[in-house]
Length: 194
Image 1: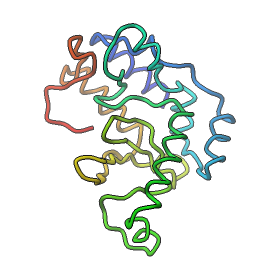
Image 2: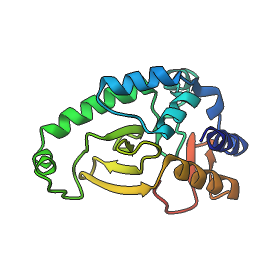
Image 3: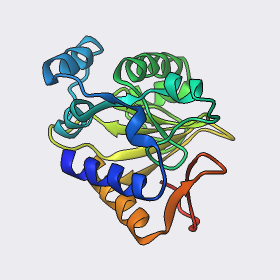
Image 4: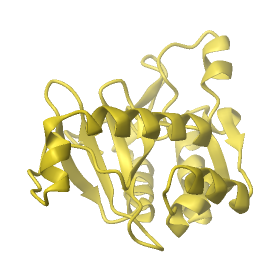
C-alpha cells in the first residue's frame, strides 16, 4: 500500500502538484489503532498503512502559504488527518443516528441511499461529501462515496484503497488527471467521479 501511495505522490508531483510538501508525517500503528478502538472501530490493514504512511495533509500550512481551496490528494477530496477524521466520524455518526434512516438500518432495512453506516470511516472529504472506508473487513475495506448535497445518497466506488490509489495514479500518469495551477487542485479531462 505504501509503495502505491508513494507512486501516487510522485505522479502528482510530476504533474505540478505541491502535495508532498504538505503531507503530515505518518503515525505509529499502535497509536492509530488506539484511536479507532476509542470509537469502537477496527481499522482494516490498508487504513493502518495509510495513516502510518502519512497523517493527512496540513491544510493550515497550505492556506497560510496564500493558497485557496483545500489541498486534495484525490480530485476534490482532501486527505483528512486522523484526529480530524475521528471527530468527523463521531459527528456524522451522531447526525445519522438522529435520522429515520438509522431506524431502517437497525431494523435490517437497507434503503441503499441517504444513510450512514457506523462501520464507515471518513478518510477523504470535500464540502459536500466524504469518501469512506468500510471497516467491517480485516485487510481491505471497500471505498464508498457518501454525498450530503443536493440530497443524501451513497455509491460504492472501489473495492479497496489500493485500487482507488492505483486507478488514480494511472490516470495521472496517462495525463487524464493533472494538477491545475490556476484552480490549485487536481482536475481531469474526464467526466469521472472518484
